Length: 305
Length: 305
Image (cartoon, rainbow over all chains, first blue to last red; front, top):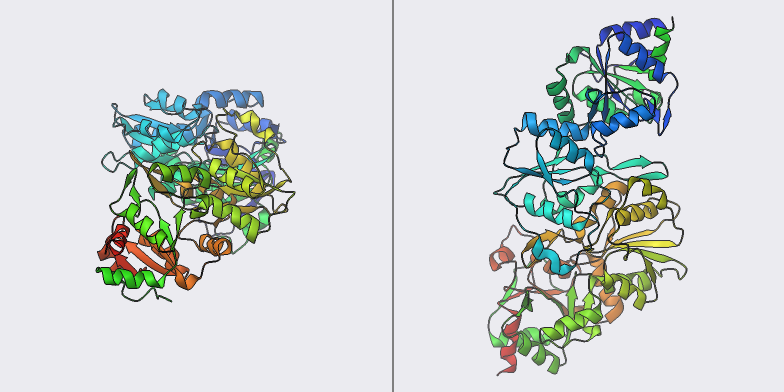
């Protein structure tokens, strides 16, 4: 089991790549910065994915983005030329559905109030959980409308993800349900990224959008996505892979590598994204990957020998 | 100058009322819990207001609510039977306008991006400051719309108040302007009340609604409203009353009384609202009013002698 305090091993030769690959059967792969940048797939990725799958490795794509269902992620992957089926995709919205169904045994007679997009609604529907709230967009509210926001005893949880159509009515309803101590509804956040990158700049993310509820309720949500551990617990509860032979691959120390390291699985950091090798080996920086490699596309070289 | 650590003096007799009134010329009055509850004016208030004014006292109504301009507050006061003119009302939106004009000397060629309602827009207009953003309501946004959110070099400040039509577009624009380090726009919050009471319950307030910006920017706003001191600084910069002869009257220790005490003016706590006499005299509770009275309506008795 890798320790977070040891010095990371840099993989630089094909022999080292082989030895590394022999140790793991399953790779959890962060996407942006590992597989692609925006809509540009990185060098060697397509060949690496093909080679690893041909050699019996399981690749699971892990994303904090809750806005798409796995069904729609498959389409996004296909567009980029990477074949994927739904079982290869582990998103924070699917993880939330798994959590509600497998871990919380969410009651059949309760509904989930969603601040979020179709990814959450579709994944909850897929596991048989009824939702409400997500379609309440584009409304113009007046101060006389507060009377229309009432308690709803059918709400068993509030799930918040990224919602580009978040509004006061949604926040006020979520607050009303969660502020009812007797109702004791779960408060779940799909991920706590404070910002996210769009093509023309950085914008407020899910971790920021939920803050009105946190401040008004003085209550913290259960957070699903990387680097939080519920996402990894849900992964193992759903995939049943051997943690000792599972490796998390990512480009960010504070999310991807922390996610794997905190969950006591091996971690491989790639240098094609946000974090640098200098940061990874800095003795004052506490999060250490087990391994470092220039890019995930390097593994294609093993198949070319 | 009253100390915040002394024991409050409880005023119970007409003689004590007279002695108290002789010490002050100006009373800053919190409204809800002091003058009225919802739409019910408290006993003795109308007579007290009349008596104090006839005796040359200046009454200024202080409110954190930023949604109405002073012009519209006057109408609200008239409906409740209390005569007031614009100069008698000191709201967080007016205070924000005074702050931008008198204290920041806000540049004539810059605009203020407003997350808020007409109270802010109207008060800024009144002092000659151009605004934008507040009318951007009821839009349905798609992920493809991020490209439409761009830097705007004309923005010199973002002012956030309560906005029942807050949406992602407003938050994303405000974030974009404030995240531009070179632009160095001011970030001003009208007040930081995390919730506020509506007739059918408590709902998220301005202090909660601005939290997506605080979290995404990792930057705190300048906060105007009670109990923060900018509101009192703006009061004195606008009214020029003698602080030694000015008394803050309110029902809440944590907002009204803290507001006056931190600003080193006298404070009178009334027992017709949120805080209790027990809380006020509790030695473990650090915020102490200078005086306590059962209700502000008691002063009518001085006039009836």
